[in-house]
Image (tube, rainbow, N blue to C red):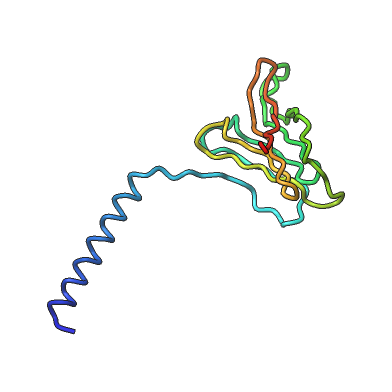
Length: 141
């Protein structure tokens, strides 16, 4: 190869590297924070990167989801509040094994989903007048 071609290739590589670096700095990273648990662990903590309010404890066997809250009747005390979940026609549980996964996008609290990993049944976190609940997302035929 001639020295001119090698020089052009080197310059092109540096320009591409600089362009990708600038693009990476301008795009905010979306972070979904989760504890590292064994694949067969029953419980997991998941937190949205946008707010402490989005801290969840998930029972991956039963699909129960709890939100971390500060108790209003006990100053300075935090705990877990159960999130109601609507029934889903595709929801089937295999006893004694992981059945559910929680996903929180890090963009908005409303982009938090619970999914049955065996059937695909999915719920979306919704905040209503009576608090947070998991609303089933149905599949259109």
